[in-house]
Image (cartoon, rainbow, N blue to C red):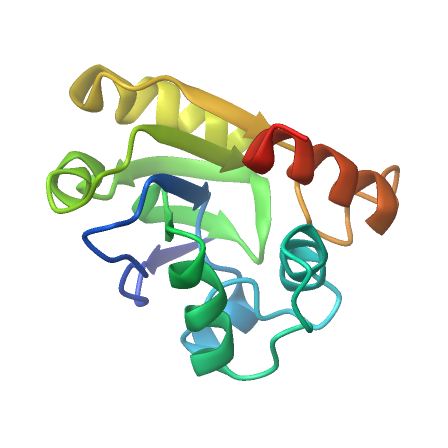
Length: 162
């Protein structure tokens, strides 16, 4: 177990309407200093497909994709004890100031990528924000039971209602 601190600022603008929350950046994401950076993570290809955009490669392209669709991106936790990237191993979680972020945006919906993010958000942040979360399937390659196409269908239905 290692005590890990969140080192990536949230991606948002005043116009952001939907906040997408992961649990905690993986070691690869912390190293890259940006979200969903593990090469096997399917978040960026799925989000690009949902919005009919080319898959973003750079941090700037990823940021532009998020902001151009009035999304915001962050993680539930500011710190925790964790083994590698295993959400199941998380102990001693401390939440980010999600209510503080929401006050700077037009966010009215919160989506969590995975059951652990949803559980931690519901316990640690929802009582303060007053906004319940909707759960998206984890885009992690560890969620092998869902194909990219299935993830796209679920993300599209949740994000666009289509």
